[in-house]
Image (cartoon, rainbow, N blue to C red; front, side):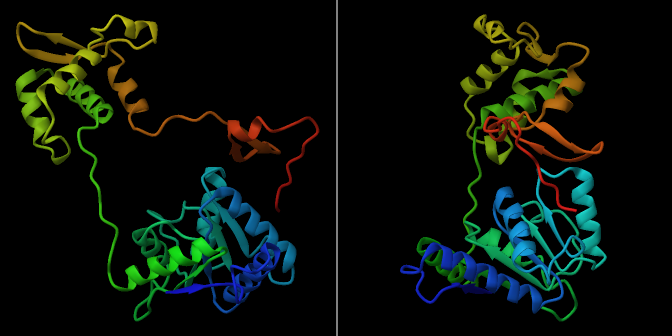
Length: 300
């Protein structure tokens, strides 16, 4: 692992000089290795680096050996990139964070991080995507582009070399997650209220859950607060206080649960198509800035 500063004095260097030097170093690193994976932290950064590398070094990069990978690209485009990477057809792949976890990307002999990954564990995870062969070590370079990044990445590298990994903080008593969990329990079968509370408290995340909080969530799910209907929030479970039990309400409970579970909020977006092929999606914030006669340019 190594932290690389593209200029001799990052405090005094002009921003344009730093930018050009960053691309020169990145190009040199890519050309010195068989397959390089570059992480940029953002989707816009991913597209920018792909575009500029092809523009600045046309004799090194073309549509056949460099590709982008991020969550705004369609599933088909991402799979195509992953398959070409596994087959060894690509010289470099530029990614936001989408290739960080859970994907078999084949052999990569160098990982480059543009700017700080913001945690030691994330840096090790990304760099660990390289060197997946017997008797080989993972190899990673972190390129910094400003003074703050240089300080942060230097400390991050020191901690990584010393084995000081970020402390894990486990959230406790998250009532939104608890509400989903109780709903899922009710879908399976009716539960005794006291027994369900004991089961929930056996989880580390809810070992300190108070009875009042538990009963408030049950009341919320049962729709016992009149003002909820004004916000289009309706009862999802029934409660029988005489028998001290609760269970699911409605015939579509399992379908609603399966299609809405999770804590990541939904974000609207519009599909972008080229000749009936879905190439990606644009988000509302980007759409709001669009004006008439604006064009999309596609890499081929």
